[in-house]
Length: 111
Length: 118
Image 1 (cartoon, each protein chain N blue to C red):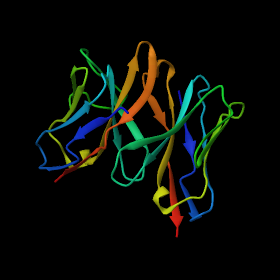
Image 2: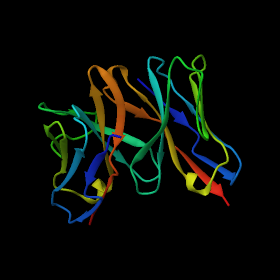
Image 3: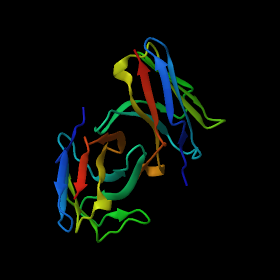
Image 4: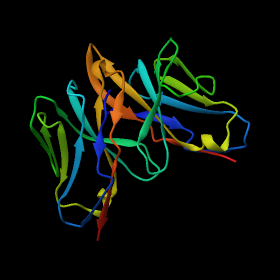
């Protein structure tokens, strides 16, 4: 089955870059997602990457995918206090019947 | 974009009572909806997959008689926590998968329901 791991906590200063890492075990996913969860709220899709891509850039967000090592990362440039949240990587199962979420990384941005 | 509305946002109920949580897809039809549970400082745990017009598929360890799921239409799924107890207190989140013409448009999440059983 799928197993998605993330580091639990990351603290950065405002204006610095943040890099959140994720490792997964199921290599059959067509997409991989990054979600953001603010306190007491649902999940917001930040970005996604096709499995046949190595990199995707979307404004301040850069996603890197290393399929060989099954490693996914999310880089947030010029991190702002509003970026403080929990970030989840996620992969859908074959046929999109369900999504497996990573353990979540809490990002703390220090002013 | 796709919007999923979840109600209520928070609810406090007495032990032994039942609580119903609604999840609606507002601008698309959702053949499949998912119900998750999230404990404090933890990731989302899939409870069940809800398919319109058929019985829900529950994950291992989730009591189907305690967490009743009904997906009567393409835009509404409900989760009823029956005979709630304090250990059922948690954050419940629904998600809908938008698919059309054989194409998958991804997953949209509701804003979650904070359930507190006293």
